[in-house]
Figure 1: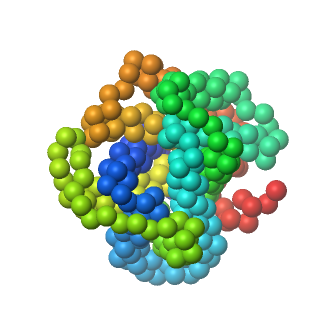
Figure 2: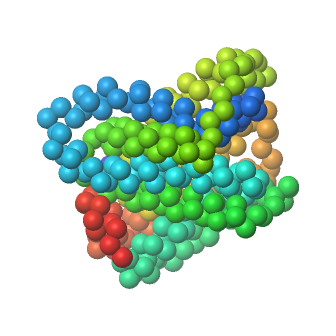
Figure 3: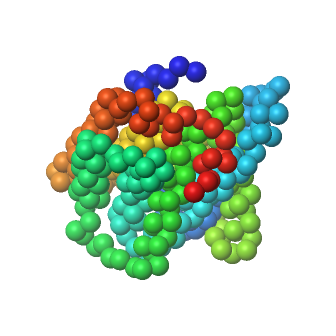
Length: 322
């Protein structure tokens, strides 16, 4: 498949935007009494049901490909989807959302470090500048000068979520091209649903549902509205486009473009919950964009041998080797 970087950037932005709306809509459910486990479980379980028929259609004549990638899909669903959300919500329970989100979005920096160690080639100066700039932008967007507090266990959960996010970008970029992205996403959702069901039944991630109206953008809506958005937009569309973007851009660039999710989340919170972003947050958004541009420019001017080998699709075995 011919890679189209420009199209990949647009797809990555769509993925970031769809992921970004999950926070405000999930918050509307949590405010009426839903547990994080219930919100995550219905979000992923619903996505698995929605993707079931398209996945079966895409697999016609390709079941051998699915069997060959079974381990990849299993690790992707368990780690990149289920555990990532579990660790993030556990971090949120112990710290502010801002600190938890910042820790999770250290993933691009961890990814640059991982690729550095694995390839034994130091990142170019422009990538380092982009990394620092993007993290500074995150600090401003999240506005951590408010009620932020640190909890040691919460920090560990946040860092664990960041590691899971690294796995998402790495495995999305390395999936066998003969396996359609919708199959990767749908199969991952099924595995993640089973994982979360087990966690719920064992009370590690308890389920609590409340079927009453929610407040969105100053209006009252049925609880079905945020659930539908979480399933169809923030999960199905987000993960499928995320895999497509990582395949076209490579794991490093895709992970940095995904930082714009924070900007989209701030915008969505303003429109849906009335939380207006301040001037400092807008400045942070500009820094994130500047960091993404730096990394993208560095990627474009890199020699073919610098990063290409790391971002070519292959089986999960090389990915797991130290």
